Image 1: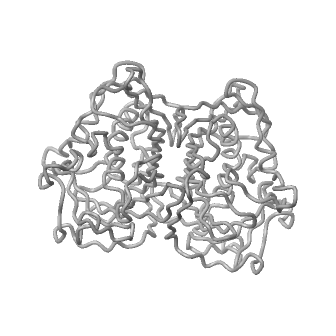
Image 2 (image 1 turned 135 degrees about the horizontal axis):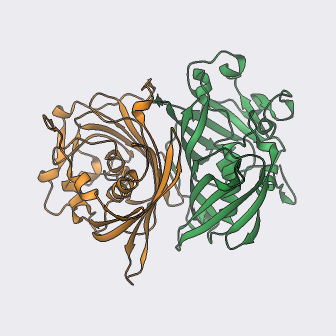
Length: 274
Length: 274
């Protein structure tokens, strides 16, 4: 929703905003509105928190690649983000962030480690060559939508934060996994806010893993996302695919296009089959 | 080349081996046999050095994902690798490594930062589901080969370390870029040694960037590689594709299969167009 007063600040941005309390050190009360069914926080929300804190420290505006290792479950409640700028060049700047939280014994430990490189996208002409495969997804207005306020009462809280649009409901949601770990869907924040470049780091880990179509669940080990362009207002078209499972691990690739059809993000994660 | 005495230790393993001199600290004299045309060291060789040092510190044997930021050029000569294990669990263990080298003013600075997660592949059944697209590559024996000792005298030293097999020579090598940034080729070390799991982190950044088919050169900013299986002896089938260029940046994906046709590695890098 863009109005005369500019972009509405979305609830992801609000819930991901930390307070800088010292040299590169940020504090935050992690929100319980981005939880999975088991009470742990969604990985995309954790990444959003760490990347936003780092963005406040790095002298270039646009994260172009962010790479995160998920080390331990993150839970709602107090946490800190410890950031460090490791190189600040003219075209690129790189920094790291650790999301740390007290464990059962009270001692602080890393839950997520992030490294990200920033640029100034406006400083280089878009000059786009795009060879990504076309989507097979009806317009958002013609799709069946689910999630958001329509979600069933027992859904994880993160499921209320966004709405999906699909040509037909995924097999796994009907108890009949399709056997084909691919999906195309529209993504929109349930609060009506438009996704920003930073929000895309959440979007690529916001949906359920597509290995659910193989009857399996999974948990992210490592995720790398390339943030390629500021998205235009409107819903985002997403394509998710898993091509290889072995030794209890699988990759998942996500591509995201904005409402104009411009590729805005590409991600790949390695995840552990549950 | 596997013989009665087991695997031959390849020159990559020899030239990437560092000496542990203290708690997590390794020293190495970076070899000039893995250089690009301009005298800088190939990114895959740098990654190989850092990952091997880290592998010596982490309590699980097999790197399954390695993610590296390339911060400054690395040159032949003395360097150090500073490693740290950040989490050692039962199934997964994660560590970081910094490849540091003296700059023009003599002060040591980061040239590469690596984070990698290790597992024990043998501890989980292979149980493979593979949906990767079939290759369109003739058998190695029917391919035209180049590189290795046959390489022209003015080639970069890294080009002598490996041989490629192709159905036909890439357009860019003949001065006529094809306009299609895709390639399929066989990879083999020129010394006849077989690639190990660790070597795959070199293989995915060992070849020339496929954007040369668009008449452009490039330099790696960040590379993430998933190491999925120990390769069988023999040459490796590789597929490289770039799908999106914009704002002076592009991604490059590489898939690697061993001689049995088993997927052994998947990588994606973000690179700066030159």
